[in-house]
Length: 464
Image (tube, rainbow, N blue to C red; front, side, top):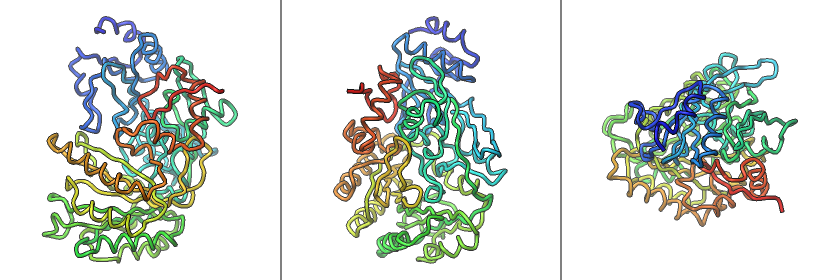
């Protein structure tokens, strides 16, 4: 299809259509993950819901694949496509706060940093992720683990309404009173149902100052193994005011703030946020802070927005990323051995293996498609690297660890960290569990031809 063929769509837009002939096309088609290199037919930079409707209608009528891009930080590259249309929502990033209803109205192209900047002016927050430049749409629709998860739940649990452009080009508002099945499916269903142009989130009291733990300990001489056991013991009695994770890896050559000469050493690190009294948080998290021999310590009383941005520099645009995950009921000694050994010998010094403690509100059932695992820990190997020549080794490192840990897992995945979902429908069924059939039936109602398939996709299934 040529630029002239797109003229009808271009003429109908308030926003901008960037086709292959446009000098800005190469920049417009790029996404955060440098491992993903695709060439769409065009990028539609929408500025209104009407733009989204026009793009959806055009794609459907011309049998074009559709990728929806919010923040553009999908690890699996769902925000772009070869030879199809990219619906780019990044300009639709408005944020508004209703202090009476304690809700936030957020455009589908906003990032968590943009949401936090406004809500924290009133000491409020939506449960978000741990990387402030992540788009709110992809994270929330797929679940949403963050720094306040154990206190207030996953991002998807705080969705109380949404404006959606469906596959037919219809604009609907989903609430508990109107289209409740659609709202249910949006809460963790992974973007299967349409383009969410506006979210309404429930707000929660957080900060504006919090106690945040971020400490890297020397992992040599068996300390990584001991540290993971200490983390397991800490989590067994930790209050739900704390959301903690442990991660292992190697000190990078250009890491700033680490003790001199520690480059290449294995580390065991702990990061956590406490919601509530600052001194209480410091005292509760002291065992992790004082566990071993710190190589770096960034802990302290800091603004919540700073905690949300703490690891932003670790995930630069254009680097290469391949992440997977699995849920494990317990951190057994065998699981700890696998994680510690893999963390000490990553394919890239930028990679880590993250272990998220899941408890409290994060472990409670969501009134939505997200199927909470009964497992207490989410293990997330993150392969992060730079050179194209290292692709095979880094992907293999991640897959090998997941394969080794599979016997200790409940079989489910956190689908925002699902690699390229090469395991197919089996893992979708295992992860959505009893919700799978209902979600497939809702999909059949709103998107019977599977127009929106570049996501954690579930095939439409008509009600029997």
